[in-house]
Length: 298
Image (cartoon, rainbow, N blue to C red; front, side):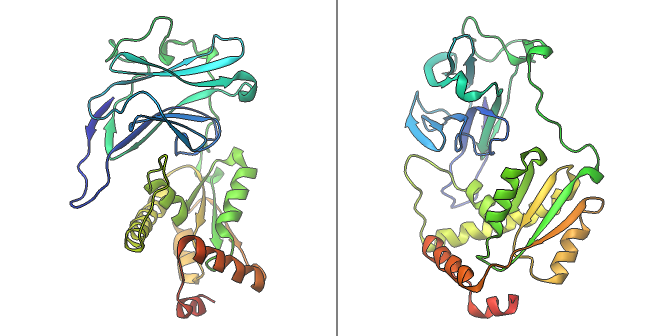
């Protein structure tokens, strides 16, 4: 249930967003934007693997959304939704063979709103439940799948500090390393990752002018700075995906992760490859690092 839309900053065009649904383990936080991740978006859309389609109707503050998974079919898992007790129909039909016995986990993505969740712990549900469905809370523990637990002690945690010039390939390396070591469940803390989470995707690509992108980049940098500050409090594995070319900054960031296994990953591509990467970055993002800043980093 969307219990409250949070007040936005004065002059902001941002609107609250809630997306609910199901994902397999190891899915990204952005519900519906990668494979085996299925969401119902408050704008009246369903989304799977980054593809948006119209479905049901829009919902917002005080609406109660039901998420239902039917595993009783021989070949398909059917995912359906309801709004305030009214069934909206089946949104997704997933071949069981493609899931390969992976469990579907409840997944919520919210932005600018407060939500309340009910897995069966409440005496009375806030809206009627279709016949034949039960809450997850009522399913016997042996029939549920426990996701892998994280590190139990700080000593089991790891932090990788990326070091390299803009465009050197740090983000690409971090993403590849994270994919190849999924069991470590790395949390990548980088500007591009935060920017992706700040922007609200939809059926049409979001167009940003230079001023809006600059403002969003500033907000992302502020968010990232705060995330890096609070990260050492959590028992997780992290990759700090920033330039980190100054010794003072490297020492300051790593000293905060006392007790972690701390490693530095330095990326230095050949000069022609680096220049090609920089040009691709300029064309894709319009982002150009001043030459004076680049020389100082070197």
